[in-house]
Image (cartoon, rainbow over all chains, first blue to last red; front, top):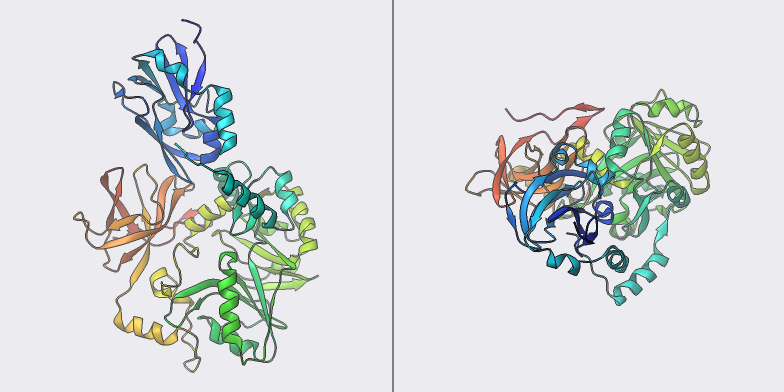
Amino acid sequence: MNELANQIRYLPSHEWGRIDEEGVLTVGISNHAQDLLGDIVFIELPEIGKQLDAEEESAIVESVKAASDIYAPLAGEVIEINEKLIDEPETVNASPLEEGWFYKIKVIDMEGFEDLMTEEEYKASCLEE
Amino acid sequence: MVKTTFNLKVKIYVYIYCSLIQKTPLFNQHINAKAKMVDFHGWSMPINYGSQLAEHEEVRSSCGIFDVSHMTVIDFRGSEARNLVRKLISNDVDALKEDYDGMYSAMLNENAGVIDDLIAYKMEFGYRLVVNCARREQDLKWISSISSGFDVEIDERIDLAMIAIQGPRSLDLLDELGLSSLKTKKRFQGTYENEILAVKTGYTGEKGFEIILPNEKSELIWEKTLNAGVSPIGLAARDTLRLEAGFNLYGFEMDDSISPLACNMAWTISWQDESRDFIGKDALMQKIEEANYHELVGIVLDERTILRQGQKLYLNENKELEGVVTSGTYSPSLKKPIALARLPKKNKKTCFAEARGKLIKAKIGSPRFVIEGKEVFEERK
Protein backbone atom coordinates (compact mmCIF):
# COMPACT_ATOMS: atom_id res chain seq x y z
CA MET A 1 0.00 0.00 0.00
CA ASN A 2 1.19 3.50 -0.66
CA GLU A 3 0.08 7.03 0.05
CA LEU A 4 -2.86 6.59 -2.34
CA ALA A 5 -4.50 4.00 -0.11
CA ASN A 6 -8.14 4.80 0.69
CA GLN A 7 -8.03 7.86 -1.50
CA ILE A 8 -11.06 8.55 -3.64
CA ARG A 9 -11.17 10.18 -7.06
CA TYR A 10 -14.07 11.05 -9.35
CA LEU A 11 -14.96 11.27 -13.04
CA PRO A 12 -16.95 14.33 -14.17
CA SER A 13 -19.65 11.80 -15.13
CA HIS A 14 -20.12 11.04 -11.38
CA GLU A 15 -18.33 7.70 -10.93
CA TRP A 16 -15.87 7.32 -8.06
CA GLY A 17 -12.84 5.07 -7.77
CA ARG A 18 -11.09 4.22 -4.51
CA ILE A 19 -7.90 2.27 -3.85
CA ASP A 20 -9.08 -0.11 -1.14
CA GLU A 21 -6.14 -2.48 -1.66
CA GLU A 22 -2.98 -2.14 -3.60
CA GLY A 23 -3.50 -2.15 -7.37
CA VAL A 24 -7.24 -2.60 -6.99
CA LEU A 25 -9.80 0.11 -7.67
CA THR A 26 -13.31 -0.10 -6.22
CA VAL A 27 -15.84 1.71 -8.42
CA GLY A 28 -19.24 3.21 -7.64
CA ILE A 29 -21.36 6.28 -8.26
CA SER A 30 -21.40 9.46 -6.19
CA ASN A 31 -23.99 10.55 -3.69
CA HIS A 32 -24.84 13.42 -6.03
CA ALA A 33 -25.44 10.92 -8.87
CA GLN A 34 -27.78 8.69 -6.86
CA ASP A 35 -29.66 11.80 -5.78
CA LEU A 36 -30.03 12.94 -9.42
CA LEU A 37 -31.21 9.49 -10.51
CA GLY A 38 -33.69 8.96 -7.70
CA ASP A 39 -34.84 5.47 -6.76
CA ILE A 40 -32.63 2.94 -8.54
CA VAL A 41 -34.41 -0.24 -9.68
CA PHE A 42 -32.04 -2.15 -11.99
CA ILE A 43 -28.28 -2.46 -12.15
CA GLU A 44 -26.34 -4.34 -14.82
CA LEU A 45 -22.78 -5.16 -13.78
CA PRO A 46 -19.82 -6.21 -15.96
CA GLU A 47 -18.72 -9.84 -16.07
CA ILE A 48 -15.79 -10.89 -13.94
CA GLY A 49 -12.69 -11.11 -16.13
CA LYS A 50 -13.81 -8.36 -18.50
CA GLN A 51 -11.03 -6.00 -19.58
CA LEU A 52 -12.13 -2.39 -19.38
CA ASP A 53 -10.56 0.66 -20.95
CA ALA A 54 -10.53 3.93 -19.06
CA GLU A 55 -13.88 5.68 -19.53
CA GLU A 56 -15.36 2.60 -21.21
CA GLU A 57 -19.03 1.82 -20.54
CA SER A 58 -18.87 -0.77 -17.81
CA ALA A 59 -22.28 -0.97 -16.15
CA ILE A 60 -25.82 0.33 -16.48
CA VAL A 61 -27.85 1.85 -13.71
CA GLU A 62 -31.55 2.38 -14.21
CA SER A 63 -33.80 4.40 -11.94
CA VAL A 64 -37.52 4.93 -12.28
CA LYS A 65 -36.58 8.20 -13.94
CA ALA A 66 -33.70 7.36 -16.30
CA ALA A 67 -31.07 4.87 -17.44
CA SER A 68 -27.38 5.79 -17.32
CA ASP A 69 -24.14 4.21 -18.42
CA ILE A 70 -21.38 3.87 -15.85
CA TYR A 71 -17.85 4.48 -17.10
CA ALA A 72 -14.68 2.87 -15.78
CA PRO A 73 -12.42 5.45 -14.11
CA LEU A 74 -9.25 3.55 -15.13
CA ALA A 75 -8.32 0.63 -17.39
CA GLY A 76 -8.15 -2.82 -15.84
CA GLU A 77 -9.69 -6.25 -15.37
CA VAL A 78 -12.92 -6.75 -13.45
CA ILE A 79 -12.06 -9.04 -10.52
CA GLU A 80 -15.12 -8.71 -8.31
CA ILE A 81 -18.69 -7.46 -8.63
CA ASN A 82 -21.16 -6.45 -5.92
CA GLU A 83 -23.82 -9.07 -6.62
CA LYS A 84 -25.99 -7.75 -3.81
CA LEU A 85 -26.93 -4.87 -6.13
CA ILE A 86 -28.76 -7.20 -8.54
CA ASP A 87 -31.52 -7.91 -6.03
CA GLU A 88 -31.11 -4.84 -3.85
CA PRO A 89 -30.29 -1.94 -6.18
CA GLU A 90 -31.67 0.47 -3.58
CA THR A 91 -28.41 -0.15 -1.69
CA VAL A 92 -26.84 2.42 -4.04
CA ASN A 93 -29.34 5.08 -2.93
CA ALA A 94 -28.80 4.26 0.72
CA SER A 95 -25.01 3.94 0.68
CA PRO A 96 -23.43 5.03 -2.60
CA LEU A 97 -19.87 5.19 -1.28
CA GLU A 98 -19.77 2.06 0.90
CA GLU A 99 -22.31 -0.78 0.59
CA GLY A 100 -23.35 0.37 -2.88
CA TRP A 101 -20.03 -0.14 -4.69
CA PHE A 102 -20.38 -1.63 -8.20
CA TYR A 103 -17.22 -3.58 -9.04
CA LYS A 104 -13.48 -3.85 -8.44
CA ILE A 105 -10.82 -3.74 -11.12
CA LYS A 106 -7.20 -4.82 -11.11
CA VAL A 107 -5.72 -1.64 -12.49
CA ILE A 108 -3.14 -1.89 -15.28
CA ASP A 109 -1.48 1.41 -14.51
CA MET A 110 -2.21 3.51 -11.40
CA GLU A 111 -0.59 6.57 -13.02
CA GLY A 112 -3.90 7.91 -14.23
CA PHE A 113 -5.44 7.86 -10.76
CA GLU A 114 -4.05 11.18 -9.70
CA ASP A 115 -5.31 12.83 -12.88
CA LEU A 116 -8.88 12.08 -11.84
CA MET A 117 -10.84 14.69 -9.89
CA THR A 118 -10.32 14.99 -6.16
CA GLU A 119 -13.37 15.15 -3.94
CA GLU A 120 -13.06 18.95 -3.72
CA GLU A 121 -12.74 19.31 -7.49
CA TYR A 122 -15.68 17.00 -8.06
CA LYS A 123 -17.90 18.81 -5.56
CA ALA A 124 -17.03 22.14 -7.17
CA SER A 125 -17.93 20.71 -10.59
CA CYS A 126 -21.32 19.55 -9.27
CA LEU A 127 -22.09 23.04 -8.02
CA GLU A 128 -21.41 24.43 -11.48
CA GLU A 129 -24.04 22.20 -13.08
CA MET B 1 -23.24 9.39 -16.62
CA VAL B 2 -25.44 12.43 -16.12
CA LYS B 3 -24.18 15.19 -18.27
CA THR B 4 -25.55 18.66 -17.82
CA THR B 5 -23.87 21.91 -18.70
CA PHE B 6 -25.29 25.27 -17.89
CA ASN B 7 -23.68 28.35 -19.26
CA LEU B 8 -24.06 31.79 -17.76
CA LYS B 9 -26.85 32.77 -20.13
CA VAL B 10 -28.90 29.80 -19.02
CA LYS B 11 -28.19 30.59 -15.39
CA ILE B 12 -29.52 34.11 -15.81
CA TYR B 13 -32.56 32.75 -17.58
CA VAL B 14 -33.10 30.23 -14.76
CA TYR B 15 -32.77 32.99 -12.21
CA ILE B 16 -35.37 35.15 -13.94
CA TYR B 17 -37.59 32.14 -14.44
CA CYS B 18 -37.35 31.13 -10.78
CA SER B 19 -38.68 34.49 -9.78
CA LEU B 20 -41.68 33.90 -12.07
CA ILE B 21 -42.37 30.31 -11.12
CA GLN B 22 -45.70 29.79 -9.40
CA LYS B 23 -46.03 28.42 -5.91
CA THR B 24 -49.05 26.63 -4.52
CA PRO B 25 -50.39 27.74 -1.12
CA LEU B 26 -48.71 24.61 0.28
CA PHE B 27 -45.20 25.51 -0.92
CA ASN B 28 -43.86 26.05 2.63
CA GLN B 29 -45.31 22.71 3.74
CA HIS B 30 -43.32 20.98 1.00
CA ILE B 31 -40.13 22.74 1.98
CA ASN B 32 -40.68 21.82 5.64
CA ALA B 33 -41.19 18.19 4.62
CA LYS B 34 -37.84 18.31 2.77
CA ALA B 35 -39.39 17.84 -0.66
CA LYS B 36 -37.27 17.92 -3.76
CA MET B 37 -38.96 20.67 -5.75
CA VAL B 38 -39.04 20.77 -9.55
CA ASP B 39 -40.44 23.07 -12.19
CA PHE B 40 -43.58 21.34 -13.39
CA HIS B 41 -45.01 23.39 -16.26
CA GLY B 42 -44.25 26.65 -14.51
CA TRP B 43 -45.19 25.48 -11.01
CA SER B 44 -42.74 24.64 -8.26
CA MET B 45 -43.96 21.19 -7.24
CA PRO B 46 -42.66 18.37 -4.99
CA ILE B 47 -41.26 15.52 -7.13
CA ASN B 48 -40.60 13.42 -4.02
CA TYR B 49 -40.04 13.75 -0.29
CA GLY B 50 -37.12 11.32 -0.26
CA SER B 51 -38.14 8.15 -2.06
CA GLN B 52 -40.81 7.88 -4.74
CA LEU B 53 -40.89 4.09 -4.30
CA ALA B 54 -41.61 4.39 -0.57
CA GLU B 55 -44.30 6.97 -1.29
CA HIS B 56 -45.89 4.73 -3.91
CA GLU B 57 -45.97 1.83 -1.46
CA GLU B 58 -47.48 4.06 1.23
CA VAL B 59 -50.45 4.95 -1.01
CA ARG B 60 -51.02 1.31 -2.04
CA SER B 61 -50.83 -0.02 1.52
CA SER B 62 -52.09 2.86 3.66
CA CYS B 63 -52.72 6.47 2.63
CA GLY B 64 -51.03 9.52 1.15
CA ILE B 65 -51.80 13.20 0.55
CA PHE B 66 -50.99 15.04 -2.69
CA ASP B 67 -50.89 18.75 -3.41
CA VAL B 68 -52.43 19.07 -6.87
CA SER B 69 -53.12 22.81 -6.68
CA HIS B 70 -51.27 23.30 -9.96
CA MET B 71 -54.32 21.96 -11.77
CA THR B 72 -56.50 24.52 -13.51
CA VAL B 73 -60.07 24.95 -12.27
CA ILE B 74 -62.52 26.68 -14.63
CA ASP B 75 -66.10 27.57 -13.65
CA PHE B 76 -68.97 28.08 -16.10
CA ARG B 77 -71.97 30.16 -15.01
CA GLY B 78 -74.93 31.59 -16.86
CA SER B 79 -78.03 30.49 -18.71
CA GLU B 80 -76.08 28.72 -21.46
CA ALA B 81 -73.37 27.07 -19.35
CA ARG B 82 -74.96 23.66 -19.90
CA ASN B 83 -75.22 24.12 -23.68
CA LEU B 84 -71.62 25.27 -23.93
CA VAL B 85 -70.18 22.44 -21.83
CA ARG B 86 -72.23 19.85 -23.75
CA LYS B 87 -70.68 21.21 -26.94
CA LEU B 88 -67.15 21.46 -25.53
CA ILE B 89 -66.64 17.99 -24.12
CA SER B 90 -67.21 14.48 -25.47
CA ASN B 91 -68.94 13.10 -22.39
CA ASP B 92 -72.43 14.41 -21.64
CA VAL B 93 -72.83 16.40 -18.42
CA ASP B 94 -76.56 15.68 -18.60
CA ALA B 95 -75.65 12.31 -17.10
CA LEU B 96 -74.60 14.12 -13.89
CA LYS B 97 -77.75 13.81 -11.79
CA GLU B 98 -76.86 15.58 -8.55
CA ASP B 99 -74.81 18.66 -7.80
CA TYR B 100 -71.14 17.81 -7.16
CA ASP B 101 -71.30 14.67 -9.28
CA GLY B 102 -68.33 14.46 -11.62
CA MET B 103 -67.27 12.64 -14.80
CA TYR B 104 -64.10 12.07 -16.77
CA SER B 105 -64.09 13.40 -20.32
CA ALA B 106 -62.04 14.58 -23.25
CA MET B 107 -62.25 17.98 -24.88
CA LEU B 108 -61.79 17.43 -28.62
CA ASN B 109 -60.89 19.55 -31.61
CA GLU B 110 -62.79 19.30 -34.92
CA ASN B 111 -60.56 16.41 -36.03
CA ALA B 112 -61.38 14.51 -32.82
CA GLY B 113 -57.87 15.05 -31.45
CA VAL B 114 -57.74 15.40 -27.68
CA ILE B 115 -57.14 19.03 -26.67
CA ASP B 116 -57.19 17.94 -23.03
CA ASP B 117 -58.65 15.41 -20.65
CA LEU B 118 -60.56 16.71 -17.68
CA ILE B 119 -63.08 16.12 -14.94
CA ALA B 120 -66.40 17.94 -15.23
CA TYR B 121 -68.49 18.63 -12.14
CA LYS B 122 -72.10 19.73 -11.95
CA MET B 123 -72.26 22.67 -9.55
CA GLU B 124 -75.22 24.59 -8.16
CA PHE B 125 -74.11 27.58 -10.26
CA GLY B 126 -73.40 25.61 -13.45
CA TYR B 127 -70.35 23.49 -14.24
CA ARG B 128 -66.74 23.22 -13.16
CA LEU B 129 -63.97 21.74 -15.33
CA VAL B 130 -60.63 20.65 -13.85
CA VAL B 131 -58.02 20.58 -16.61
CA ASN B 132 -54.26 20.01 -16.85
CA CYS B 133 -51.99 22.92 -15.94
CA ALA B 134 -49.77 21.92 -18.86
CA ARG B 135 -52.70 22.65 -21.18
CA ARG B 136 -54.03 25.72 -19.40
CA GLU B 137 -53.29 28.27 -22.12
CA GLN B 138 -54.50 26.14 -25.03
CA ASP B 139 -57.64 25.18 -23.11
CA LEU B 140 -58.56 28.73 -22.10
CA LYS B 141 -57.98 29.99 -25.63
CA TRP B 142 -60.05 27.19 -27.12
CA ILE B 143 -62.88 27.54 -24.62
CA SER B 144 -62.97 31.28 -25.14
CA SER B 145 -63.12 30.89 -28.94
CA ILE B 146 -66.01 28.40 -28.72
CA SER B 147 -67.92 30.35 -26.08
CA SER B 148 -68.47 33.50 -28.11
CA GLY B 149 -72.19 33.98 -28.61
CA PHE B 150 -73.07 31.92 -25.51
CA ASP B 151 -74.57 33.58 -22.45
CA VAL B 152 -71.92 32.24 -20.11
CA GLU B 153 -69.38 33.58 -17.66
CA ILE B 154 -66.07 31.72 -17.54
CA ASP B 155 -63.80 32.06 -14.48
CA GLU B 156 -60.42 30.55 -13.89
CA ARG B 157 -60.35 29.91 -10.12
CA ILE B 158 -56.79 30.79 -9.15
CA ASP B 159 -58.14 31.37 -5.63
CA LEU B 160 -58.68 27.63 -5.19
CA ALA B 161 -56.25 24.93 -4.08
CA MET B 162 -56.64 21.22 -4.74
CA ILE B 163 -55.62 18.27 -2.57
CA ALA B 164 -55.93 14.52 -3.19
CA ILE B 165 -56.04 11.99 -0.35
CA GLN B 166 -55.64 8.44 -1.62
CA GLY B 167 -55.16 4.93 -0.33
CA PRO B 168 -57.06 2.12 1.44
CA ARG B 169 -57.11 4.09 4.70
CA SER B 170 -58.02 7.46 3.15
CA LEU B 171 -61.74 7.36 3.95
CA ASP B 172 -60.95 6.94 7.67
CA LEU B 173 -59.90 10.60 7.64
CA LEU B 174 -63.25 12.02 6.57
CA ASP B 175 -64.54 12.71 10.11
CA GLU B 176 -61.31 14.35 11.17
CA LEU B 177 -61.41 16.65 8.14
CA GLY B 178 -65.06 17.62 8.61
CA LEU B 179 -66.12 15.74 5.47
CA SER B 180 -68.32 13.08 7.10
CA SER B 181 -71.13 13.56 4.59
CA LEU B 182 -68.85 12.19 1.84
CA LYS B 183 -68.86 8.73 3.47
CA THR B 184 -72.12 7.59 1.92
CA LYS B 185 -71.24 8.89 -1.54
CA LYS B 186 -70.24 6.63 -4.40
CA ARG B 187 -67.31 7.02 -6.78
CA PHE B 188 -67.50 10.33 -8.68
CA GLN B 189 -70.07 11.74 -6.26
CA GLY B 190 -69.30 14.68 -4.04
CA THR B 191 -70.32 17.14 -1.35
CA TYR B 192 -69.92 20.86 -0.88
CA GLU B 193 -69.68 22.26 2.63
CA ASN B 194 -67.77 25.21 4.12
CA GLU B 195 -66.57 26.21 0.65
CA ILE B 196 -64.98 22.77 0.20
CA LEU B 197 -65.89 20.62 -2.80
CA ALA B 198 -65.00 17.02 -1.91
CA VAL B 199 -65.47 14.21 -4.44
CA LYS B 200 -64.66 10.52 -4.34
CA THR B 201 -62.22 10.42 -7.19
CA GLY B 202 -58.49 10.25 -7.78
CA TYR B 203 -55.61 9.35 -10.02
CA THR B 204 -54.07 6.38 -8.20
CA GLY B 205 -56.45 3.43 -8.59
CA GLU B 206 -57.03 3.42 -4.83
CA LYS B 207 -60.00 4.48 -2.71
CA GLY B 208 -59.83 8.14 -1.98
CA PHE B 209 -61.10 11.65 -2.62
CA GLU B 210 -60.06 14.99 -3.97
CA ILE B 211 -60.95 18.32 -2.47
CA ILE B 212 -61.06 21.74 -4.09
CA LEU B 213 -60.96 24.51 -1.49
CA PRO B 214 -60.00 28.16 -0.96
CA ASN B 215 -56.21 28.60 -0.94
CA GLU B 216 -56.25 29.89 2.64
CA LYS B 217 -57.99 26.75 3.92
CA SER B 218 -55.54 24.31 2.34
CA GLU B 219 -52.84 24.58 5.00
CA LEU B 220 -55.13 23.49 7.82
CA ILE B 221 -56.42 20.45 5.89
CA TRP B 222 -52.83 19.52 4.95
CA GLU B 223 -51.57 19.80 8.53
CA LYS B 224 -54.53 17.89 9.98
CA THR B 225 -53.94 15.06 7.51
CA LEU B 226 -50.22 14.90 8.23
CA ASN B 227 -50.92 14.95 11.97
CA ALA B 228 -53.13 11.90 11.44
CA GLY B 229 -49.99 10.07 10.30
CA VAL B 230 -50.50 10.42 6.55
CA SER B 231 -47.42 10.89 4.32
CA PRO B 232 -47.10 13.57 1.65
CA ILE B 233 -46.64 12.09 -1.83
CA GLY B 234 -44.78 13.73 -4.71
CA LEU B 235 -45.45 13.89 -8.43
CA ALA B 236 -43.04 11.03 -9.20
CA ALA B 237 -45.08 8.52 -7.18
CA ARG B 238 -48.27 10.06 -8.56
CA ASP B 239 -46.99 9.09 -12.01
CA THR B 240 -46.16 5.45 -11.17
CA LEU B 241 -49.51 5.12 -9.34
CA ARG B 242 -51.52 6.46 -12.29
CA LEU B 243 -49.59 4.30 -14.71
CA GLU B 244 -50.20 1.13 -12.69
CA ALA B 245 -53.89 2.08 -12.57
CA GLY B 246 -53.88 2.62 -16.35
CA PHE B 247 -54.85 6.29 -16.25
CA ASN B 248 -53.81 8.45 -19.19
CA LEU B 249 -51.50 11.41 -18.87
CA TYR B 250 -51.81 14.25 -21.34
CA GLY B 251 -48.82 14.53 -23.66
CA PHE B 252 -48.10 10.84 -23.18
CA GLU B 253 -51.13 8.66 -24.01
CA MET B 254 -52.88 11.46 -25.87
CA ASP B 255 -52.42 14.77 -27.58
CA ASP B 256 -54.32 16.87 -30.09
CA SER B 257 -53.45 14.47 -32.93
CA ILE B 258 -54.72 11.38 -31.09
CA SER B 259 -58.41 10.51 -30.98
CA PRO B 260 -60.08 9.08 -27.86
CA LEU B 261 -60.46 5.80 -29.79
CA ALA B 262 -56.67 5.35 -29.88
CA CYS B 263 -56.09 6.11 -26.20
CA ASN B 264 -58.63 3.94 -24.45
CA MET B 265 -61.07 6.82 -24.00
CA ALA B 266 -63.91 5.64 -26.25
CA TRP B 267 -65.93 5.03 -23.08
CA THR B 268 -65.84 8.73 -22.29
CA ILE B 269 -67.74 9.64 -25.47
CA SER B 270 -71.45 9.87 -24.88
CA TRP B 271 -73.67 8.98 -27.85
CA GLN B 272 -76.84 8.79 -25.70
CA ASP B 273 -78.43 12.00 -26.94
CA GLU B 274 -78.20 11.79 -30.72
CA SER B 275 -79.19 15.44 -31.09
CA ARG B 276 -76.18 16.62 -29.06
CA ASP B 277 -73.62 18.20 -31.35
CA PHE B 278 -70.28 18.11 -29.52
CA ILE B 279 -67.05 19.22 -31.13
CA GLY B 280 -65.23 16.36 -32.85
CA LYS B 281 -68.39 14.24 -33.20
CA ASP B 282 -68.35 14.05 -37.04
CA ALA B 283 -64.66 13.19 -37.18
CA LEU B 284 -65.16 10.51 -34.53
CA MET B 285 -68.02 8.92 -36.46
CA GLN B 286 -65.87 8.80 -39.54
CA LYS B 287 -62.98 7.21 -37.65
CA ILE B 288 -65.26 4.58 -36.19
CA GLU B 289 -66.54 3.77 -39.67
CA GLU B 290 -63.02 3.47 -41.05
CA ALA B 291 -62.09 1.28 -38.06
CA ASN B 292 -58.45 1.92 -38.81
CA TYR B 293 -57.17 3.22 -35.53
CA HIS B 294 -54.49 2.14 -33.11
CA GLU B 295 -55.29 0.93 -29.63
CA LEU B 296 -53.82 1.59 -26.23
CA VAL B 297 -52.58 -1.57 -24.53
CA GLY B 298 -50.71 -2.55 -21.41
CA ILE B 299 -47.23 -4.05 -21.68
CA VAL B 300 -45.41 -6.14 -19.08
CA LEU B 301 -41.75 -7.04 -19.41
CA ASP B 302 -39.91 -9.86 -17.69
CA GLU B 303 -36.56 -8.25 -18.53
CA ARG B 304 -34.65 -5.91 -16.27
CA THR B 305 -34.99 -2.80 -18.40
CA ILE B 306 -37.57 -0.05 -18.44
CA LEU B 307 -39.39 0.95 -21.61
CA ARG B 308 -39.50 4.72 -22.04
CA GLN B 309 -41.89 7.13 -23.73
CA GLY B 310 -41.30 7.27 -27.49
CA GLN B 311 -39.55 3.90 -27.68
CA LYS B 312 -40.65 1.86 -30.70
CA LEU B 313 -42.41 -1.49 -30.41
CA TYR B 314 -42.89 -4.06 -33.15
CA LEU B 315 -45.57 -6.70 -33.59
CA ASN B 316 -43.12 -9.17 -35.16
CA GLU B 317 -39.44 -9.99 -35.07
CA ASN B 318 -38.87 -8.49 -38.50
CA LYS B 319 -39.58 -5.14 -36.92
CA GLU B 320 -42.72 -4.58 -38.94
CA LEU B 321 -45.99 -3.10 -37.72
CA GLU B 322 -44.67 -0.43 -35.53
CA GLY B 323 -46.15 0.97 -32.35
CA VAL B 324 -44.89 3.27 -29.65
CA VAL B 325 -44.50 3.32 -25.89
CA THR B 326 -46.60 6.19 -24.52
CA SER B 327 -45.52 5.83 -20.87
CA GLY B 328 -43.13 3.37 -19.31
CA THR B 329 -41.92 2.82 -15.80
CA TYR B 330 -40.93 0.33 -13.16
CA SER B 331 -44.02 -0.91 -11.37
CA PRO B 332 -43.28 -0.78 -7.65
CA SER B 333 -46.26 -3.07 -6.99
CA LEU B 334 -45.49 -5.74 -9.60
CA LYS B 335 -41.71 -5.24 -9.28
CA LYS B 336 -41.47 -5.35 -13.07
CA PRO B 337 -41.23 -2.90 -15.93
CA ILE B 338 -44.66 -1.90 -17.26
CA ALA B 339 -45.77 0.41 -20.03
CA LEU B 340 -48.75 1.77 -21.86
CA ALA B 341 -48.32 1.60 -25.61
CA ARG B 342 -50.17 2.56 -28.77
CA LEU B 343 -50.12 -0.35 -31.21
CA PRO B 344 -51.79 -1.23 -34.52
CA LYS B 345 -54.98 -3.13 -33.71
CA LYS B 346 -53.95 -6.69 -34.55
CA ASN B 347 -54.88 -8.57 -31.38
CA LYS B 348 -51.33 -9.89 -30.91
CA LYS B 349 -50.27 -11.45 -27.62
CA THR B 350 -46.68 -10.25 -27.68
CA CYS B 351 -44.58 -7.48 -29.14
CA PHE B 352 -40.89 -6.67 -29.35
CA ALA B 353 -38.79 -3.80 -28.15
CA GLU B 354 -35.21 -2.94 -28.89
CA ALA B 355 -33.17 -2.59 -25.72
CA ARG B 356 -29.41 -2.38 -25.47
CA GLY B 357 -28.94 -3.62 -29.00
CA LYS B 358 -31.14 -6.71 -28.78
CA LEU B 359 -34.78 -7.48 -29.40
CA ILE B 360 -36.74 -8.35 -26.27
CA LYS B 361 -40.20 -9.83 -26.03
CA ALA B 362 -43.01 -8.17 -24.08
CA LYS B 363 -46.47 -9.35 -23.08
CA ILE B 364 -49.50 -7.43 -24.34
CA GLY B 365 -52.64 -7.13 -22.24
CA SER B 366 -55.15 -4.82 -20.63
CA PRO B 367 -54.05 -1.20 -20.17
CA ARG B 368 -54.28 -1.45 -16.39
CA PHE B 369 -52.01 -3.19 -13.93
CA VAL B 370 -52.97 -2.52 -10.31
CA ILE B 371 -56.29 -1.41 -8.84
CA GLU B 372 -56.87 -1.16 -5.08
CA GLY B 373 -53.61 -2.89 -4.32
CA LYS B 374 -54.34 -5.92 -6.51
CA GLU B 375 -52.79 -6.96 -9.79
CA VAL B 376 -55.41 -6.67 -12.54
CA PHE B 377 -53.25 -6.98 -15.65
CA GLU B 378 -54.85 -9.49 -18.02
CA GLU B 379 -52.40 -10.97 -20.45
CA ARG B 380 -53.89 -11.73 -23.85
CA LYS B 381 -54.61 -15.40 -24.25
